[in-house]
Image (cartoon, rainbow, N blue to C red; front, side, top):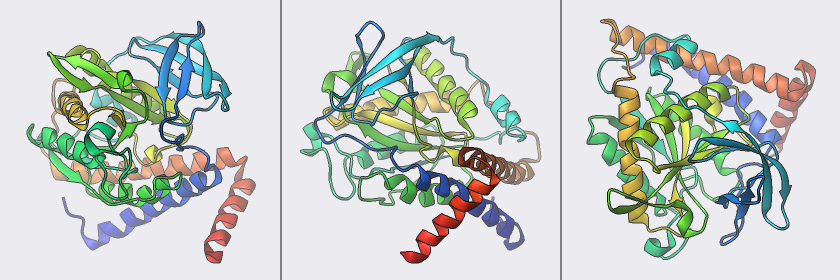
Length: 361
C-alpha cells in the first residue's frame, strides 16, 4: 500500500511525535544498552548460587530473566566490580500463545491481511562478529552479524514472506547506537511490516549458546525485551508466544527472555524484538543455522494456525492498521514520558533542556 500525499502528512507527524518523546526519554537515561569490554561477562546467579546466565550485556537491579525452563528470576543485587548479579525466584511461568488477533485487538486494530506480509530486519550494532569465523569479535563496518541477518531474511523469504532488510550503519558500537538506529526503525515502520527484528549476538562463553538440534550444532536464540517502554505488557506477551512455539518446534532453540533496563526502540512498536543469535565465541555458521530455524517459529506465529485471515477490505484495513498502531504508540509514548519525568512540568523542562542541548551542538 502506498500512501498519497494527504495521508502521508499526518502519518509523518505521528512518527515525529513518537520519535520526539522516545528519543527524549532515551537521552535522559543513557546508561543502559552498554556492554562490558571484550572477554568480560556478567554472571547472573540463581538464589542457590547456580549460574543462570552469562552475558556481556550490562545488568541492573530489577532486570528479569525467563530461563529455558520458563522460570522467572529478578535481579536484586549487582556487584559491578566482581561482575556478578544475584537474583530472587519470582515463579514458574505457564507460557501460552496469545493469538496475533488478540494483540491487534488490544491495539485497537482490525484483523491482519490474509496473505503473508512483510518482516523488517536491521542491526543496531553492525560491528558485532564471531571470532572463530570472522577472526575478531568486532569489525568496523558490516560485521559478521550482517551475514546472520541475511540468513534470517533468506529463511523467511523461502517461506513466502517479504523482507525489508536494512544494512544501515549505526557505528560506533556504543550506548548511542540505539538513538542512531531509531531513525532506521522509523523508516522500516513506514514500510508497514508485520513485525521488526533487531539482530545481535551476545558476548558469552562458547558453551552458553551452543545447542545440538537434529544432530546438528546450532546456536540458540535469546530474546531481549526493554522494561522501560509503554508497550512492555504486549511486548512480553508477544515474546512469550514466540518462545512457546519455539519450545514446541525445537526444544532448546530459544534460550530465554531477558527483560532489561531500557527500551531498545521497542516503544515504537509492540511487535518489535531484539534477538541474540549466539555469542562472539560461537561459529557464525552455527548462528546462521539457529536463526534460520527461528524463521519457522515466526512464520507459524504470524501466518500459521494462530493467524486470522482478513476480510475483503484488505487495503483499507492496512491503512487503518498503520495509522492505529502509530497513534497508539504515540499516545503511549507521551504518557510514559510524562509519568517517568514526574509530571507535566518536569516533562516540559526535560524537553526544553533537550532542545537546548541540540542548539548548542
